[in-house]
Amino acid sequence: MEERGAQTEEAEERAMPTRRAVLQAAIGTASIFTALSVLYVGAGLIPRVTKTPENAPPQVGDILVYATGDKINQSVQVTDLPEGGPFLLAFPMDPKTKVVRNKELKNTLLILKQAPSSYDPQVAAHVSEGVVCYSAICTHLGCTVSLWEASQKLLRCPCHGALYDPRLDKVVGGPAPQPLAQLPIRIEGSQIVVAGEFLGPIGAQV
Ligand code: FES
Image 1: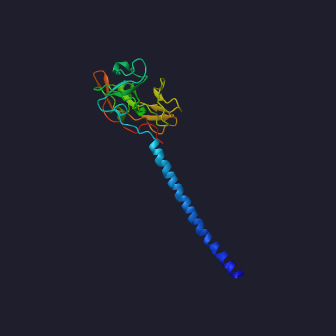
Image 2: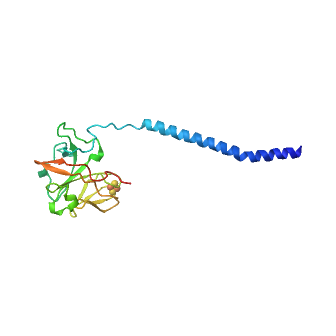
């Protein structure tokens, strides 16, 4: 009897890892289902961004308007821009509907006028009458590049000090991993008009 009892115990011990494995597998499966459920419910809670003219990216033919200040939403005139800086912030606007595309942060643009001869040829290819346009969203963590270093003629991000050279389209200081994306423009009359898509990725690049 004692021997049979010992054999039964041995058999149970041998079976234990199998039972443990089955239990662990069951717990694992339950966890996966729970995680999937949370993801599913979570996805339902994330508000969907509806595409509208206000948050569409800049379109060819859009004109640039002031993003801030007394002239907000008025078109920027080439003569408003002093050669050599500073820059100003702008949004694209559909000239037919007058819809300003300011419901998308990534549409924030900076425009600046410099001597045409000061630009690197690659940048100059999309500059018009000395006016250059870039995304104003810093490629580090996405702050708006809003400071002008007049002595060096550089753009500076107020958050962590990234420095961009608008003549070369290069990062020349700070933590930004990539230059700002240039937006091709042309001048029509005295207005600044979008002439193409962004020439690089916009916003924080991780
Ligand atoms: S977000 Fe611009 S430097 Fe960090």
